[in-house]
Amino acid sequence: MEKALKNRLTYGPMMLAALFLLLWLDNAIQRWTLNRVVDSGHPVGIAGVGLLVLLLLILPIATVELAALFAAEKVRPYRVLAGAGAASLVIHAFCTQFDFFKPYATSVLAFIIVAVMLLAALMRALDKQTQEAIHHMAGTVLAMMYLGGLAWFLMSIRVKVAIGHHGEIKFHGTTMQILMMLVVVKSTDIGAFFGGRAMGRRKLIPWLSPGKTWEGLACGLLFAGAVAMCFAPAIPKMNIFQAALFGILIGGIGQVGDLLESMMKRDAEVKDSGTLVPGFGGVLDIIDSPLLAAPFAYLVFSLL
Image (tube, rainbow, N blue to C red; front, side):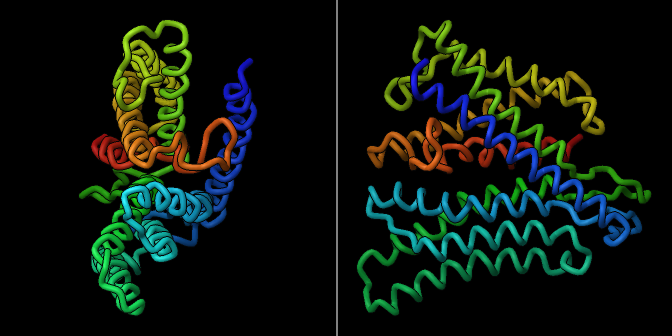
């Protein structure tokens, strides 16, 4: 067995176990606080604590890796500021579940984005430098929005509670929806990897990602659809047909996220964004697909 595949089979289940543990903690905390948080008369508990912990652990590492990719084109974001901005966006999404915060949510979101841009300019001014000031400002905001902005949607899926005109709950985020999205995205990778090894003939985008094939992509999307169907009974208002479409759609978008990062890595002339996880590369290599899929999953769940 080749070393890369062996590392994936070793570290993949370990990361999956850690994810299950955090999502179990997430769900347990919500159940423990069920009667303490009320949304328009409905007890909902405090949602997303486990997911918040996970994102706050991995986003700083991903920020450092993304900054290293940007540096290839002399775009040097302020890493601490970009990481703090990304974390602030995730915390903002977490706080949107509380009634006291909702009237200020839009204003706070705008303030975070503008504040990070202005602070990046201020930091360049404190260095008494005008060269590459735009690169620093743009890089800092882009790093924050690429990681924190997309992670905002992931957290929002978990904490969102939508109340209908007659006081009924139309949508209630759960850990199962988060797990479904993450598993579907990674199932696409698994299906594409093994399908491509077994049947791959025609290259998908040889100049960008020579290892991907059309046959592998088809296998990945079919596998993602099949996996999503298994989650259908646990997702309110989602039938098996809708789940299959969800799996194919989100799986496909996840592959676009993977290709987007491949483009940045090609530009930086590196194979992986990091070496933290053997067989997978860096944290950015692991989270790129789920992050890009999150806004689309948020939209699909909201439309059910």
